[in-house]
Image (cartoon, rainbow, N blue to C red; front, side):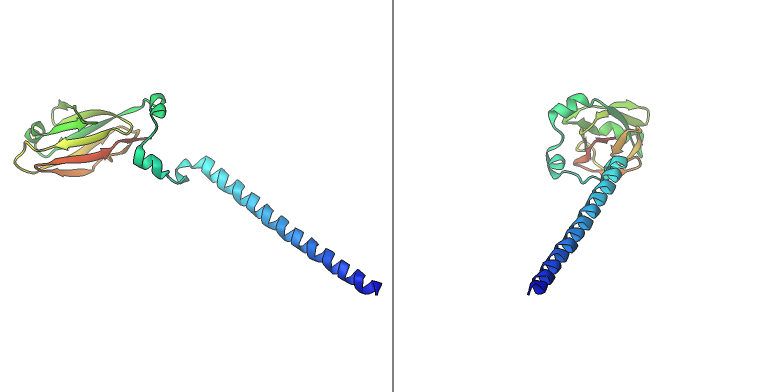
Length: 159
């Protein structure tokens, strides 16, 4: 009778040894996977998922105090006279400086650019002629058709 109990005890111990070895393999795999993902994130921050709260509400005020980078956007139109009919607003304030055939805007991160074409009687085609290197949005070469309305070019994104 003791041999049967010894056999059950032996099988019980083998079962727990196999289970422990399996758990150890799973934990080692999880650790290796975590290290690989962390190293990828360190090398390429763009792989991080965007926070939807940040997209809806923008960056915190405290962060914008420490980040004072700015960029330049040059906007041109098909006809030089058409530029005089446009009003350009940055964060709701009219602002632009005309240089020959283009309008130059000094912008900061998360600024909102709008173009008012309500004074024009025809459609005006404008293009983002040039942007500074640290600007992500709006993109160089983007075309907009301005009619008797206000068109939002969007929110400025800097690198």
